[in-house]
Amino acid sequence: MPGFERIAPILLLLASNIFMTFAWYGHLKYRSAPLMLAIVASWGIAFFEYSLMVPANRIGYAVYSAPQLKGMQEVITLLVFAWFSSWYLGQPLKWNHWAGFALIAVAAWLIFLET
Image 1 (cartoon, helix red, strand yellow):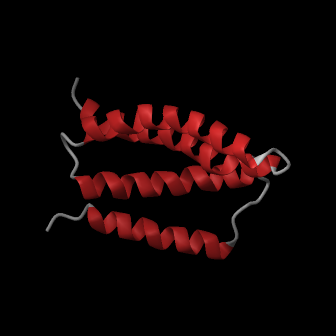
Image 2 (cartoon, rainbow, N blue to C red):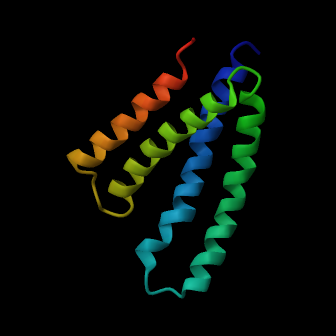
């Protein structure tokens, strides 16, 4: 299927980052839960993240370099986190957060420039 190698990694990275964001930050909403429970739950959620991340990188490596895959993943992570922070944690990002994220997005864009 034409374009599969270009699109599939993006979709898989998006899905994997949703799982990972919940694994890393979801427990913050339940700070009264025991720490060990948060750790075990996070590891369980992270299993699904890895089940999507590894295929994303395997498929994507056919058309993207490793640095390009990493840059893409970072931008997707920031977008997912911005949504998660506002929607789930009730902490919308401020202008300085967006400015910092924009600088990271510019860095990722530079990775895709052909030299």
